[in-house]
Image (cartoon, rainbow, N blue to C red; front, side, top):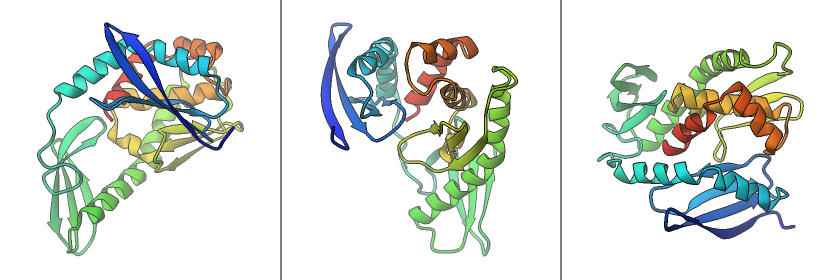
Length: 237
């Protein structure tokens, strides 16, 4: 099999045809991206059987439809991206991005705003990098705390060997066969319930390094509402 493969699948649901773009690559986990109008995108490992992808999708057809409907109703911010005045998420809540001039870089997050202090010039790329660097610093403590909290759902001897925080482009988290979790620092933008879902998902992979029935049975056992939490994560994209 090649190093990457893309194909289009179609599903009939509620009298409509759902177009899905399946992208296979040398990744270890399967993830879904839901958009308002563009095809749903599923990224999966090269060797994952198609029937597992099909099952993964069919179990989620109802809330895919709900998520797409919700996304279509959402207003688009007038100032997107990282321009001053844009709305940026922090732990699931939108805050106004404010920037002021100062000799030292700093970031302060309040209930309604994210205030950056930066030397001139205030380029959008510089604002983005400064904010994401700050999120990565916060994530080192916050995500470690969330891991410990979610671990309370598992047996006390669950073999977690470590935690790595980094910014990732294509996934929220991963787990090595040695039990080391890797979490995306941009999870700091997500609601706590969605963050805990990602952590729980990766902790379950320590025992079941696949997305088969035993994996989902464990997810159902330790986090019965994981589907609702996953939907929060997908609809925030």
